[in-house]
Amino acid sequence: QVQLVESGGGLVQAGGSLELSCAASGNIFSRNTMGWYRQAPGKQRELVGTITSGANTNYADSVKGRFTVSRDNAKKVVYLQMNSLKPEDTAVYYCNLQDWRTLGNYWGEGTQVTVTS
Image (cartoon, rainbow, N blue to C red; front, top):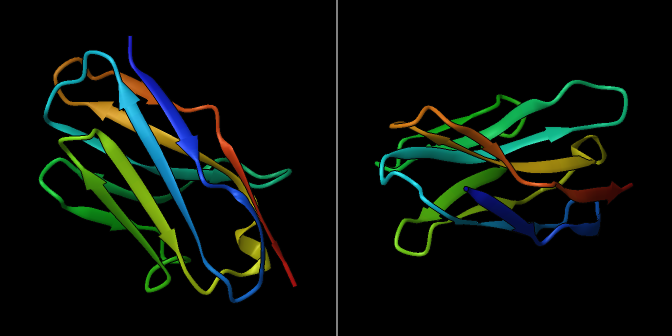
């Protein structure tokens, strides 16, 4: 069973920074994609950014140049560094892992990020 535990959410003023982290545990294939999605009230869950076990990244246009996804394969941790935060970045942020061997798609419980103007 794969578990994902997020940490690092909170309240920040516009222009500020936050870093989220997500620790994975369980039987995880070494080749996988980890990343972050977010869901704002009344909206669908959307991609923020992902990173493969080979360090290839993909970002939503809305966060390019402001957010950075990174990972520590040995620790099975993925990070999301968020800079120049905007009120529209307010959402629940979810960690995601896609296992390339089992095709499993796993989610964390989410962490709230609130950006005030």
